[in-house]
Image (cartoon, rainbow, N blue to C red; front, top):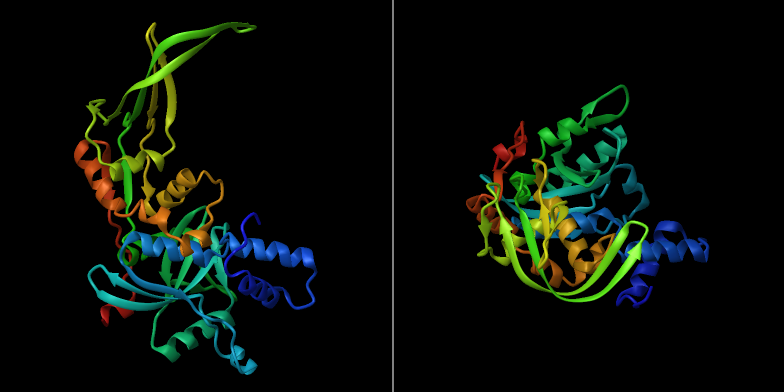
Length: 328
């Protein structure tokens, strides 16, 4: 680690608790590193909850249980969170966080019963946050159905019953094809000409003399707020170049119509601004300057909708409303 974490002692202690006190030095160092960069999924999900704007509080629950016999009855979930749920008001829930790339998330019967027992103890519903291929769903534990032995949930049903939009304020948006950002470079001075096997290569001293945006009708737009411009940092753009005697224009455009969830955009934005392949979630959890720079993402998408850059915005309701919401 280049910079010593401010809570290195806690990280070492947590690593030893997870690995056991007889773990070798290499294993401990690797686990400390993983904890420090925030690989625990709870860090990522917590930041997404806070960023989307409907979460008043979210924090980890200490899972060091005592007496040991309590583990036969209770399973302490990963997180406790309070949301301003759309249509239901302030709601406090327990959340267990999972990652599974298979199409079915499977939970053991005893594991389910222990989570439910803890939820009943506190009088709070238990939700499961499931990440698959970078897409998060959030479902009530009752959505899982009993198979031969375990309680299972396939990804399709998880998405159909997801509470991400209703609880967190997540949404889906679809940009218009041909929307993009365009950068014009003016050729000022020819520096050198190099002969290659592909032909002549010219090196120029150039300056940027124009930047503009386009919507789905290829209309040029210049008055686009910084938060609205974030869309282009969160999308996979196709880059082409147009050359004239005086200019090179770089066109970065959307070439296919497809949707994205807002929570997925956050990962891309943090990667873009941090110049990092893997987002350092724990660092952002402790120092949220980068998060603060991309707040109110929804207002930027709505601005893009009016400008013709975005075609659709969807607030997605679950196919089945959990019973506990009807009781609020």
